[in-house]
Structures are given as C-alpha cells and as structure tokens.
Image 1 (tube, rainbow, N blue to C red):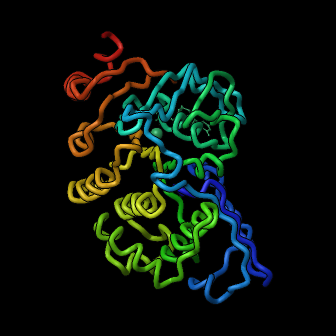
Image 2 (cartoon, rainbow, N blue to C red; image 1 turned 180 degrees about the vertical axis):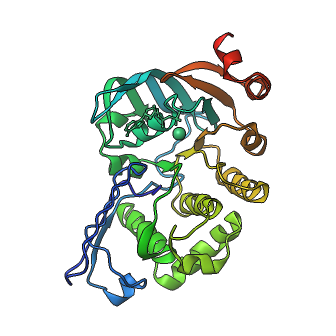
Length: 318
Ligand code: ADP
Ligand code: MG
C-alpha cells in the first residue's frame, strides 16, 4: 500500500487477527482487521494509529525564489536484509523542488529496490552512502516519519485489504495525518466534500469508494487508486513505481493528468518506468538509467527515444 508505511489498527472487541506484510509493501500491518466496512462508525472505540505523508505544502519553504534541494542521494549502497545480496551499488541522485525525474532501466537493475530503500522498507539494509531529504538524514528516520516528512511511494503491485472500504481507509488515513499536523479531523460528510474533487481528478466513480481497498480491482483500477491516495494525502516527493504498467491508454492519460495536476512549484515526482509512453504524458526534467544498482546515465527526453530505438545496450556504450 502506498501511503501507510505502518498502519496499526487495534480494537477492544476480539476480532479476527490479521497481519499482512507483503514483499511489495513497506511495513503494512493490521493487528486486527474488522470485517465490517463501516468500521469506524460501527466500532467508534477503535484506536487507530496510522502514519502518512505530510501536507503537500507543509515544511516546504522556497529559498528566496530558488528551487530547494529536496532529495540528495550520495553513493547509496544496499543489500537484501535476508541474504545479504548487494542490490544498490552506489546510487547518486539530486532532486530539486518542482522537478520530475524518471528512472528507466532493465528488469532487475534495482529500480524498485531503490524506491523501497528510500521509504525504509524492511527487506533492505543500507550499507553505505547518505540520503538527505529536506535537509534531514532520511536513513535515520523511521518509515512512518519518512511518510510524515512528505515521501509517498506508489507500489508496483498495490496490496489488497479485504474488509476495509476505500472510503473508510482514506478517511482514517487522512484524519490520522490531520491529527499529526494538529488539524481537526473531518467527519464523513466533510471528508466526502474533500474527496469528491479528487475522485474527479483521477476520473474515478464515487461507488469506487465503497469497494474494499484494491480487492478485485483491475490492474488499472489499482493504479488509479494509488494516485487517488496521493491526491488525498499529498506528498512533497511522490515516487511512482511503474504506474503505467497494466494501464490502457485512457487510464494512462487519466493517471498522468492527475499526477500533473498535483505538481506544484514545491513538490517533485520520481517515476520509474520502462516506457516512453508515460514520459509523453508526464514530461520529466531528467531521465536516469539504472544499471546494476547505480545510475549509469542521466539526460533529457532524448534518452528515451534512443532507448526505444536501440534498447539498453545503446545506453551502456554511450
Ligand atoms: P527492478 O525494479 O529494476 O526490476 P528490483 O529492484 O525489483 O529491480 O530488483 C533488483 C534485483 O534484486 C532483482 O534481481 C530482484 O530479484 C532482487 N530483489 C529485490 N528485492 C528482493 C527481495 N526482497 N528478495 C530477494 N531478491 C530481491
Ligand atoms: Mg521494479
């Protein structure tokens, strides 16, 4: 799941226990999962703790009109925690406010690993280098604090959460963030008013909100849902891992339009993709090629054209 690096849901009544920590997710656990969709209304005494992305604008101060350095990754190396296998071999990347960066690269080159390492996924251990996000050492922060600081990751394969409706999930998530920001929570009606324009933005029908999170969603619906989460919660750096995979051209256009609409002068996007098609809809400031766990080349959109014609071989020889 994209936004919730850790989402703990506990309740006094003895309900079936469920823990889900899929490999594609960061840390995503429900200690108790109610069966009822209307959980927060049916069980008002539930205690919910969720950690989320910060407000799109929170904490982002432009530096006398100069774009601010948002993310600085230096010589980042990381291994798979379980096996010790080295995946990231010295990644260097700087992202300024307002920029859109794309990472392309062969399957298995480490793109998703890099994204997950940035959000603090437990499957990976950082063995060297540094990551500074908004002037803070990101690597010292807990996954939930990274979220709160304004990092969002949309997963390549979003997880399903049986028994929890999209609207309850989003409302709880958004309210948890508002609590963290010291803002009053929105009641269901207020939340409805807040989310309706977001649904329109992603071109999602309102009945989508009553369905369980990602349960039975098509690939395209899952991706739209990820972007809806981003739209609801906001982020200063949104990392989008293959949001184009499984999308037909209409869905791709909708999703891209929504991502573009979410861009402000003070936030940034890092998107991972294989295809030039996405880059025609969301125009990147820079394109990077990931090769064997490091960024081997950086350039503009012309890189994507070369790639399309000649493949990744052309990249390693230039
Ligand atoms: P990409 O996203 O560029 O296709 P990944 O970052 O997903 O590549 O994977 C890079 C390599 O690391 C692959 O060989 C993949 O099998 C391996 N890998 C990544 N995560 C894990 C994991 N949790 N357990 C085992 N192998 C992994
Ligand atoms: Mg990947």
